[in-house]
Length: 166
Image 1: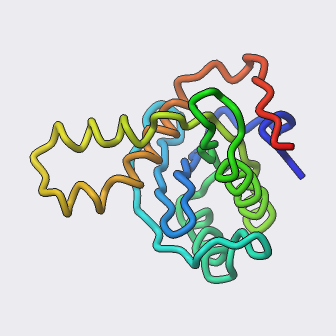
Image 2: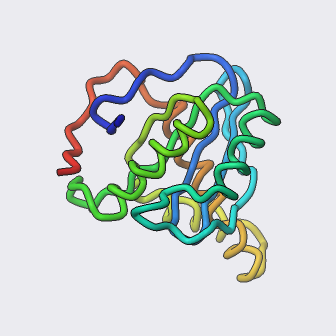
Image 3: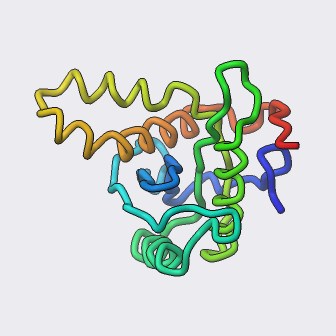
């Protein structure tokens, strides 16, 4: 099982998908093949998450089709840590989901600290002239865009921080 501390490197070219993991909704963003710009794609109303089924069959098929359609080369899953940087139950769920995603799509996965990504997405949406209903509908995919853009802008060769999930 991969973890944020022993994840494999993602290809430096080709389309990646960013994931804002949630137990009811999953925000999805993708980048261009040169990995410069992330764009929001969609929000998946997923089968509710469980320990026994971190990725339900219907959702696995969705992600397999997405990977094929968008010619993805990897996944970047947001890791929801506490503000202190410590792992949370939600971060353990995100790791379990990411591993299932990698198994079902045969693509590598990386995790990235997603603290404050939802707050950043809210700021972006509040700057627009959208109704509350439209902002709520777009929040998860914009958070996924923030997660993916943060990864694209990061120094991938930087040593990882120990986010012990024990």
